[in-house]
Each structure stands twice: as structure tokens, then as C-alpha cells.
Amino acid sequence: MIAPGAPRVEPRSETVRIAQRGRDAIDESHDGATGHGAQLDRYGSLVLAIAQVVWTHNPEGEMVGEQPSWAAYTGQTQAQYENRGWLDAVHPDDRATNAAQFQHAVATQTPCELEHRLRRHDGEYRYFSVRTVPIIAADGTVREWAGIHTDITERKLIERALRDGESRLRELSDSMPQIVWGARPDGAFDYANRRWFDCTGRPIGIGGDDSWTDVVHADDQAQAVEEWQTALKSGNAYEIECRLKNADGDYRWHVTRALPVRDPTGMITRWVGTCTDIDVRKRKEEDLRNSAALLVQSNSELEALALVAAHDLQEPLRKIQSFASRMRDEQSATLNGDGLDSLDRIQNAATRMRTLVNDLLEFSQFSAKSKPFVQVDLNEVAAGVVADLEVRLHETGARIEVGILPTIESDRLQMRQLLQNLIGNALKFHRKGESPIVRVAAEMIDTPDAQDRTVQTFRLSVADNGIGFDERYLSRIFKIFQRLHGRGEYEGTGIGLAICRKIAERHGGTITAKSKPGDGAAFIVTLPSAQRRQAREASSGKS
Image 1 (spheres, one colour):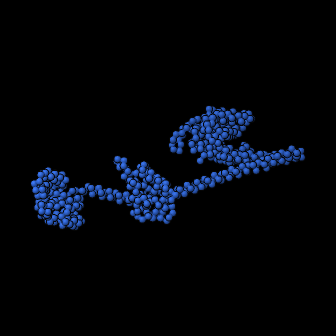
Image 2: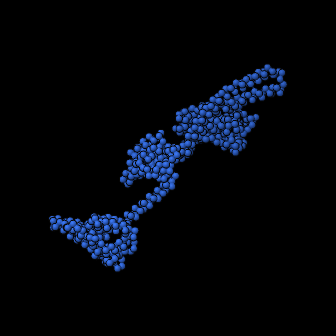
């Protein structure tokens, strides 16, 4: 669009005029030499192809005569742009610099390149790249100056946006609690946010490989550098945990990660990385490892103590029982009813004490006695348990119904303990005057694991028609020494169900129960059909 009052420009009049002046200059320099016509054509075509705003100045660098292209763009009249009036269309902040640069070109008779903002006829300033060259006459003097203005506004706006984006990115990077860094495709370290310099105390602006390797702990340095070089060669992500020296000279654990940035062709153009402080986590992990080691040591000592205590307690208990029995045999004729009752109490207490010591020993040695997991047919295990309980079944008139049970990966001895304790409890807590009925059954179900994957699980249940219990005591019955009934009503030490819980947990399962007072109870054990590799290794003593 042409501003009101500006002279009308024929589209190619100025470029044609520049081309004609170029022909004149070539004519003079070649003096009619063969082939100059082709050069003229190329010169004219070049001007027509690239010119946006074209203009000429006299040898002194002043704009004179008609400049249609300049007038059309700026809206200046000839009276306004002549001599040095053209500078009025240049942005005020760029005028002095431009004038000095152009004056230097005129004085030295050399081409001049510059950038400035030029006011369009509608008042908008746009960025231009300016190129002006002297046209030399045959006598070596400057005949005139020819110039071209090329609009680069879009490029400048993109550059500004990139600078602004980079500035915002750096501000964001500097505000992060992590160390953020960048490297060239060859791995040379060329950027780090403020956090890096604050943490390490390194001078701001340092770069290159030497700016980070000596910050890494000497014990971690070789691995950190080796894996970094491997990542550079392979183009794979980089990740390592190492200790970095802070400004105080102390070392803190960091996890360092880096990812390659690729162009559309897949070439790596940059590496972007972070260093995250994990010192607190690492120290907690170390504390946990130390605590676990101490716990293992403590458990070993407790197991040894339990063995010694069991051995040392068994002997005096046997003596108490032996002397009480001898006294009963030898002195029964002279003892009255109270004396005989006291002897019976002594013998019963010693017997209960021996049973308690044996149960405690079994509970404390549970892990030590564990064997590797193998395929175990629970039908065979249940048949063996029923055979062992034959006397009690006869005494109570009980009936045990065993359904089809699965074969699972487990510890055979512990599966026997589990079924014997559960079936034995069902026989023990029966209703007076009613024969116990115990039903053992299993079914396969699908359950989600920790990674939300579906795994096959067997639900084993042992149900009875006994006295039952109130489910508000459910969590209590699986704890050691917890009893819901007095010793005078039902024998036992309160350890059997605690052992059942440990067996279920060791096999990656659970145990619970459903019951109502006077309406029997059902104990439900869930067991995976196959154990995880870690559990199998742990059961066989591998680390």
C-alpha cells in the first residue's frame, strides 16, 4: 500500500534503472568486450529477483533524484529524503550508528552492511538488512552507491522469541531445586543452572569436561566417566548414582540423569541432564541395612538363647516331675487328700511348662527350620494329619471331610504344621455333647499382586461346627499367647495360630477367619500356587 501523497511507482522501474546503471558500469569496465551482454542479463535478473527496496546515492553518499522504491515504502517525498533526509525514516535509536557506518564506507569506498529499523509509510517500524556497494567508474572513482533493503522482521521476531524463551527457560532452571545442565553432542559440558554453582562453589561460567569430573568423589569418578562415554557412543540415556562435592567440601549423594535431544533425522544435537540430591534417602537406606544386619544378628543370638534356655529349662522340669511322681508313689499312704492334690498340681504345672517351652522353641526357630519350597500335594499332607489324629477322632467321635486339595509350591513340613494346628483346633473347641465335624476344602481364585497383575491363588478353608468366637477378637487370636478361653476350659499355650500366621506369611499368603459364637468357625488361608523367585531364593538361604 502507498501512503497518500507518495509518488506512484511502476513495479520494476527502479530495479530496471539500477540494472541500466549496472550495464553502463560494465560497459565502461569491459569496453565492449565479448560476453558482457550475458553479464548484463544476469545482473538485471539478480536485482529483479532479490530487491525489496532499492535505491542509489551519489558518490558523496547522499540520496538524490527520483527514488520510487524508497518513496513508495517510506512515504517520503523527494524533498524529504534528498541528501541526508532519508535518515529521518530510520528509527531514532539506529540513526547515529547507521550514519557513522555509512560515512565510513563512503570514506573508504568499501561495501557496507548493517541492520536497522525503517519506518513504513503507515508508521510501523520494521527490521531491515541493508547492503550498499560502490559502483566504480572506469577511472577508478565511485560513480554512485547502490543499495538494497531486505525485510528481516520475521527473522528478528523469531530470534527475539527464542531469546525470550531461552531467558524464561534459564529463569525456570535457576528456580529449580535440582541441578540442571547441558552438553554438546560430543559431551562437552557447556551449561549449568545457578544451583550447580551454588552447590559446588565453582566459578560461574566454567565449562568443559574438567568442570565436573573433579567434583565427583574419587571412588565414583571412574564409573561416572566410563558410563558417560558409553552413553555418548551409544546415544542411550545416562543414569548413575554418585557423590558430588559441595562448596563446603562435603560429599552428598546425587542421582545424575541425562537424555539426548535429537533432530528430525535422529541426530543428537544436545544432551540435557539433571542431578538430584538423594543423600537423605541413601543415608536412610544405609541405616536400614545396618538395622537389618543388627536384627539378623539379634535374631541369631535369640535363637541361640532359645536353644540354651530350652535345654536348661527342660532338665529342672523333668526333675520336678520325677520327684513329684516319686513322692506320690512313696508317700501316698501317709499324705492326706490335700497333699495328694498339691502333688497333682505340681505335676500338671510342670507338664504345662514343658509344653510351653517346646512351643516357644518351635516358634522362635520357625525361620531357621524352614526348608526350600517344593511341589507339595496337600491331599497327601491332609491324609497324614488325619492319620496322626486318629486317637482324638475316636475319643471325640469326630468326622473329618477332606475335599480335593491342590498341589502347591511350598514347605511340606510347614504345610503339615498348618493343617495339623487348624484341624486340631477344630477338634479341641467342639460343643459339648455334639460330635465335631471338620471340613477341609480348597478353590482356585485370581487375585492381583503388588504390580496389579493377576496371579493364581488357592483359598484353603478349615471349617467346623464348634463353639465359634466373636469376630471382634479376630486380630487377637493370631497373636502369640492370646487366648479367648481359660486354661481350665481348653488346654493349649496360645501359640498354634501364631505359627499358622507365620507359615501363611512366609509363603506369601494370608490367614483370617469367619465365625459367630456358638455357630462354628472357618479359618481361611490364601496361598499362591507358585512362589516368586525371591521367595524361593530366600527359603533356600540365597542372598
